[in-house]
Image 1: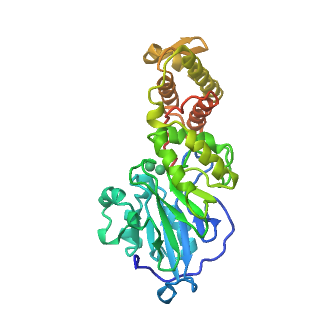
Image 2 (image 1 turned 90 degrees about the vertical axis):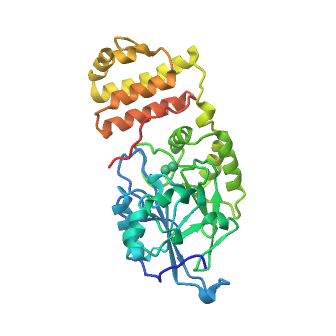
Image 3 (image 1 turned 30 degrees about the vertical axis):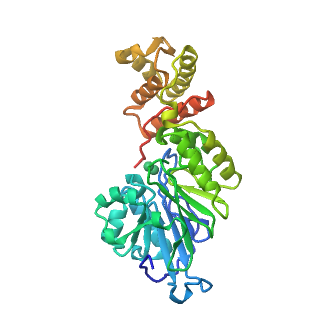
Length: 379
Ligand SMILES: [Fe+2]
Ligand SMILES: [Fe+2]
């Protein structure tokens, strides 16, 4: 047997509320994240509760319940994640395992607190490559389960199987998604993650989510070739994936699964778009992007915008400023990124976030690569 585990509790039913409650996205599968209204970027941990099955060939030694937390998140989200998990399984010591897609702190740094303080018996599922880095959270090696050894199926003590799915360089070499064939949910990590439009409500992605997914992948994924390979791996899963549950953004289901898989195969990202050609038509396009941001900025912060542009000598090498006429002189994407960052410096998130998102949206409208703007989570 791969895991040690605890016996079950019986979670109570509760009314659904995105801010305070776990939300069931598939049978026994709960979104347990922290998401504040108007938040551009947030992390998604998921809780999967497996119940022992009498029909399993392992039934004779099957345990009653196996509680798996996928991509537990960071310390700043942990109090809410803990609260939501405990609503479903009772105390956190009933956690059987944590899966960590890759080593980034927003994915699984809270696993140190969870194992160190609340669930010392829980296993840590990750690839060997990921383990080499997350071991520095002081996680116990004896509880590490190398999911790379179970690509043909990871048997759970409750009788079900999980399928680790390698997605190399999406965005880490050792990134491993997790497929649950029973619910057909793929926990995809950063792959298919994204920023969320500020007015987006609810947990499920729609057409409006592609803008934020495109922007996130263009900044964080290294190259289209890695994504083409990962999409092919996902397409080969049997039975076919019905829900993609990413570590950022909204949950993808229904026709959007195939739609976004297709778009992902074509999307140019990272090094594909690093050396953008700087010609006059590109500068015109980036000028349009910048002016959309400036127009919105004037509606939020008024004359301060034009005073900033006139007084900030540093940017005149890159921007031509003549009254309210502003154009990009050189290095289109970089100049827009620098100007937006300088503009939102010191502004509250309620002003900064819409301006950053407008830059991303305008770039997409003109088929330009997404500008990289800071998308720190709101505390
Ligand atoms: Fe990451
Ligand atoms: Fe992430």
